[in-house]
Amino acid sequence: MIIGSKFSEKNQQYLKVVFQLSKQDTDYQIPVQDINQKLELDRTELKNVLEHLQDLGFIKIATIGGPLLYGHITITQKGIKKGSQL
Image: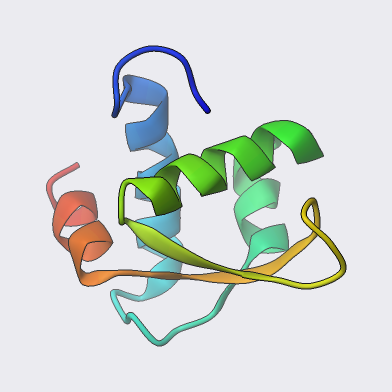
């Protein structure tokens, strides 16, 4: 869980990257590796960020290989709406 406001400036930055990579398509599978290349976070921090964005309803996570290894995510309609406002 990320401490602080529910949707901090950093989280807005993270969602903006996801929004840009999503092609504004809720079915488009965004490789987590692509997100991390833009954000340059360590594995644990990236996991926390993605889980927080999922908890807020902005993305959906698909996992492979355990809790710390995400394969891809998709953006939700709520994520597209919020991302377009950033």
